[in-house]
Length: 395
Image (cartoon, rainbow, N blue to C red; front, top):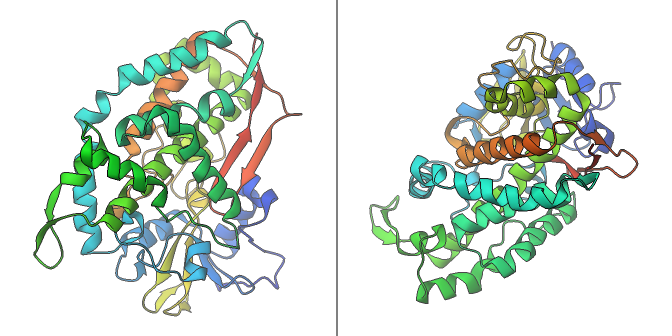
C-alpha cells in the first residue's frame, strides 16, 4: 500500500467546505485505499486509521508539537510564544502542563456545576413557548463564554468581546494566517489582576511558582502568562460551543435516539461521548515530523507535516463496531475528539460537564426540535468544523 497524491481521484483538501461538512465517505476511502496519504499541492501527509492516529499522538520523539498543531501554523513557520502549552514538547510542556493542571482540579470543575445549571436555566427559561431558538447564538455561544470567564477571571462586560476576538481570528485564520496565538488582548486584565487578586485562574497563574527546565524556581514571565490565559480562554470558548451545536444537529437528525435519552436521562453522559465520536469538532490535528518514519512501506521524511485525521480515526471499523451508526447507548471508549496522550485536553472534564448539563437542561424543557435548515449555517476553518447558526423549531 503506498501513499497517493492529488493527481489521484482520491483528493483530501482540508480547506474544502464540502469535505469539512461531511468528510466521512472520503475518510472511509483513505482508510482503505491510502492509509498513508500525501497531498503534494498543500505539502502534507495524513494518517487516517485509529491505530496510526494513536501512534502519532504518543510518539513524541517523531511527531513534535513545538512548531504548531495546525496545518496553517506549521506551514507559516512562525515562532510559538513561550507558554503556549498545546504547542510545546518536553521538558517545557511537562512543566507548563503540570502548572496549568493545578487550575483544573476535579474539585474546582465539579464546584462549577450548580452555576452552569443556573446559567442554562437563565438562558433557556425565556425561550419556553417561543416556538424556537438558535442553539448556537442563544446557547452555544453563551454558556462556554460565561463558564470559562468564571474560571479565568474575565469581567462580565468584556466576555462577549473576548469571545468575538477568537471567532474573528478563526474566520481570518485560513491560509492567510491569524493572530490566534497572541495574548495581548489580556494584557490589561493581567495588569489589573496584579493589583486586584481574586479566586480565578488568572490570579493563581500570576503568583504560581514552579521549577523550570533549568532548575530555576520562578514565576511565569509576562509572555508566558499571556500565552497561558490566551490558550485557556480560546479553547474554553470554542470546543464546547462546537459540541453544543453538533449535539443539536445530531439529536434532530436522530429523533429516535433523542427519545431514548428523554426516557432515560442517565444516558446523557454516554450520549455526549457518542456525539464527540460521531462528529468530531476537529477534522485533524497536525504535527511536525522530526525524523524519518515509515508507514505502509513508505518513508515520511523528517521536516514533513503530518495530519492526524481525528475525524476519520473516530469512525474506523477496526476499533468501533458499525462506526457510522449513531447510538447513544454505545460506550465508545477512547476517541480523539479531545486529544490523546500528553496533549489530552486539560479542559476535557469541563467540556464534558458543560455538554452534559446543557443537554439535560435543554431536554427538560424541549424534548423535541427540528432544525430550520433554511437559516442554518455551517462553518469550516480547515481544522475545526462547527455551526455558525443552528436555529430550531420547538413545539
